Image 1: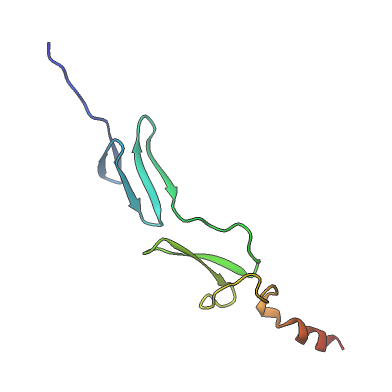
Image 2: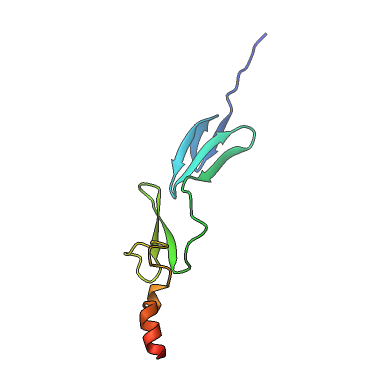
Length: 101
């Protein structure tokens, strides 16, 4: 009696992976070859869900780290709280009060 043992594999974007094998895709996606569904991928970056509207999430693709930056100037970090509750595009509360007087 001849027994044929076939190992299940996944083919993802032209590359063959064995069952249970994991790898990192561009965009910080952790992918795994799963039976019977095939390839399953999920994002490895934990994105915040509660931050000021004047901030945006940026993901550093080399380190897969998330940073919050100001939408008006992405070179500047967004630090919710700490006196930064107002959108910086509108100036400080003191300046707005002076204009109203």
